[in-house]
Image (cartoon, rainbow, N blue to C red; front, side):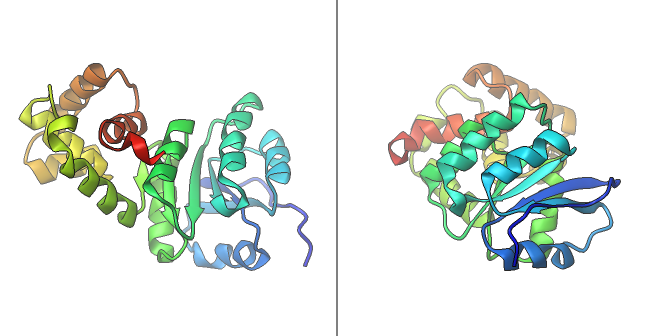
Amino acid sequence: MSNAPKRMSACSGIRILVVHGQAMMRETLGPLLRDRDLQIVGSCASLEEASKILAQEPVDVVLIDSDLGLERVLDLLTQAKTVGFEGHFLITAVRMGIGTVLHALERGALGVLMQHNAPSEVVTAIHRVAKGELWLDSEAVKRMTAAVSSGEHRVWQGFSLRECAVLKAVLEGLTNHEIALKLHISRSSVKYALTKLFAKTGVRTRAQLVRTALDRRAHHWL
């Protein structure tokens, strides 16, 4: 089967580029991602082909396999910005350590997803990342929250109780609305707590906030 990049005509909804070394994965993702708001506008087997497509086609989410070489995948994130790419990267993996997750977030990826997840979770992840929200695989979330909790006195120092609660919820991958429901506070209170957290940690995004919180506990994993 040819590894040549495939493109589709212009579409509405979330435009996805699939970059995966296995032809079977590229061919089967379309039928699996049954959602009227998702359209695969291209698929390819190499990072070089992906770079060419991103320079020519409007793409909202790049669903990309880390087995193509994580460092090279992350280099593509940087290169994509130079050709006007304004979308987001969702990295898939068969297995991925915490250090790898942190490195991916630091370099600009918004999502990390294990390949064994159900199609419904992949669809949810794509929707969240397309909106610029952080998405982490549930397995990664459990490991990271456990790691942070084990060094809680180092991570939470200088934060209020509400800020600590909001930060923990962010680490769990919750949206502002979900955090408000979980903590029984208003969305404006969540936004205010996040603003304070951003100011205290010197970051601007949720992904950077996660990275900073974990760095305080887990810098030795990288």
